[in-house]
Length: 442
Image: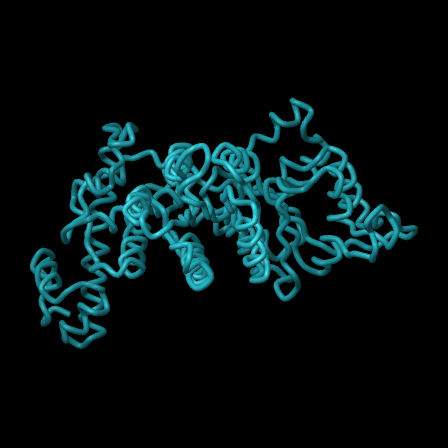
């Protein structure tokens, strides 16, 4: 997991990065909003977290958060503030920030906040894996077929669709599961050091090479090497990578002997690699080598029946994180969720629901709490009305079945059943009446 630290005080920025690196987090520095936008636009990874000071020389970091959400970047965002800026931090939470931390408490609060995000990401991965839509069932079938093989896999998909999670799933289901799984952020590799990063180097290979160093191929030996944002590989490294994959051997920088390559390669991109080939930014022969088997991750809009179950999961999760009573979506809000385009996919859904739970004043999340219309985006597409109504019907059936199961498990004890469902006893009574469920029936 990597943290993008946005802080204009160079000494304090270095201090934060050192603190995080000692806790085994990777870091990237940015000293201005403009620089942070460049870092995010050029090399952001799916599991990145942004940690930003509120006040920066070229504006407040709430502007960075708004820009990220407008551009479809739904990555967790933590804001650093001073005591007198708490009101602005609360506003940032409403915009979709994950948390805010007072600077004097940073040492005590930052690592627990990152751990909470990591745990939420694990739950996020789990809920992605268990989606029930036809498109995801087909995707899971492909993963089951290819995972036990040694075929190279290319994962295509938009930002926020969970490509990195799926790469990890392939590794866990493979015959290499008990061996290393190494992730390479291709967007962060410098042209000068990329060869050493992949293949390692011997002592004295270049200025500064005071010791022998293993590369990614050696670190991942026997396991899986995941190339994230593979379109960003320097062209020179693309040629060397192709040779290593075809000949199953490579040579460390400055070395005289080849080493055997025993690695399964998985790559991912959100870019049209055919277009990159046409623009001479990506080698055609490497593309052919990477796509032994191609998996295209469907967008959330392609999996309409997943939206409400995912929204419910995030609603319950967010209520627990924010210490709020678990609300529910009203019917109008459900229609909005189903009709919206979700350019940021599942991560955007998570952020929208998290913010809605924060600002929801009552027991129901309304369209106003979702604030999707306020973003100036088209929300309801009448051409999808029939599909939306079918999803609403399935959601009602799913809710009724969950209530029946909870009452059955609790042997008719409605207090226990309400606790299992995460709702109050009066709410359970109301829902049982709505669905015509009685204790005697279950």
